[in-house]
Image 1 (tube, rainbow, N blue to C red):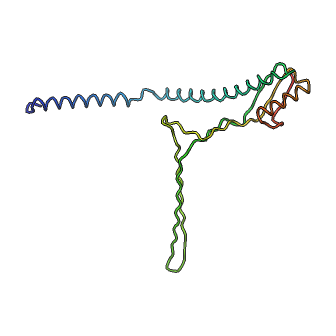
Image 2 (tube, rainbow, N blue to C red):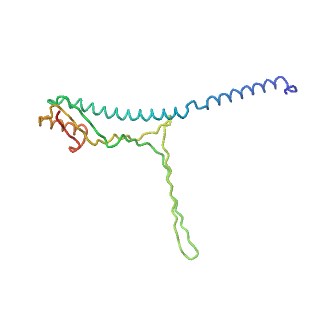
Length: 182
């Protein structure tokens, strides 16, 4: 096949063939998706579970902090706290937006006039180098209610102290707080 070619030309062709083979093998290796559908589903489930665990951990951190501080109030004794939220944490991503508005006025032969207005808006989410959205603002979940159970809550003075401490620390209204004795 290559009998009529010079030695240098044969070397170039063999080198090109070897390089092509290496490139094809590299593409085959790097484009092959090692994760099958079942593994992807498992990965997504684990990701959802982890985000739910993070949210529960934040909730538990707030409850444990409140429990810790309330138990230090004189006469409170043993304290348990439960906080309910109306929704989860809300994240506001950054967007690039481009809005255009075009207005056209047309006149016909009879003297009639009409105006056509066309507008469009294009929003694109801004992402970081890791393809994660750039966050402008994160809003903590809104507290719906707080229940405190304390062994010292049968004393009206202690109950009022616990009540005031919960309202102040969480910035919630009085109707959102209930104090019970153990």
